[in-house]
Length: 271
Image (cartoon, rainbow, N blue to C red; front, top):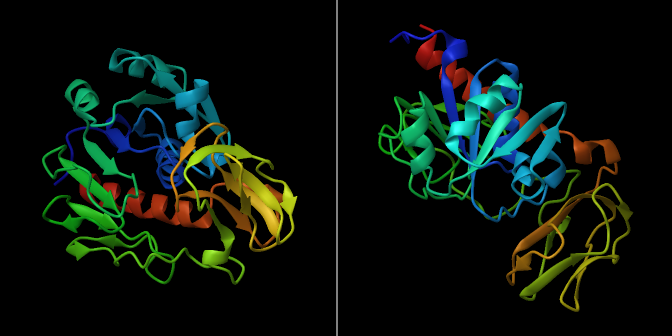
């Protein structure tokens, strides 16, 4: 079914503005779609240098030459588009923004491994990223988010691969590259994103409890200063490849997922 609108007139609402959501938003913005992001009040992104959700705290965030701007109400969304920026509005449920924008496409890019409330009736076309969604049931299509042969694949029937609980392999490491806190408390980074660290280095502390690097590499992601962290929570990650520039670039995973989303939208509206 071909849309009555031109593709550039389609309004795309993305739930979430973390690393993967930002990669999707970046690709769709460059493809000239009208993109709007919605977020929770206190995002917990680790890969902050490539996550538009930082605009929640700082008002604006630039990722690879594209800028997101926090707006205080849906009425300001059009102004952000006119300024060639991606509007970001704090609207955890998304109801206020959906009611105002009446988006053509809704994308659940929270990457929560479960559905936190997205319904197939939220828009004429609804996309779910990763496990927790079933194409034809709670969304129209699902895009695979698991690293491997099927990454970015558009699923028109069924679900994505189940969550393994094991981080994807980078440079031969999986669980070792992820920084987690073994204590609940206030997060205080001792390093910055892009810094080189050695195995055994203290990368951060939660209250007075150290978060130690299990491998050598560069700090690819860290929570913000002052975030309240829970025991077992991911608070950062180390990239063993040691290339500092990759800490400030959208990952190949996010680009692949963004490509899958773009394919899904074109499949639906460009025929």
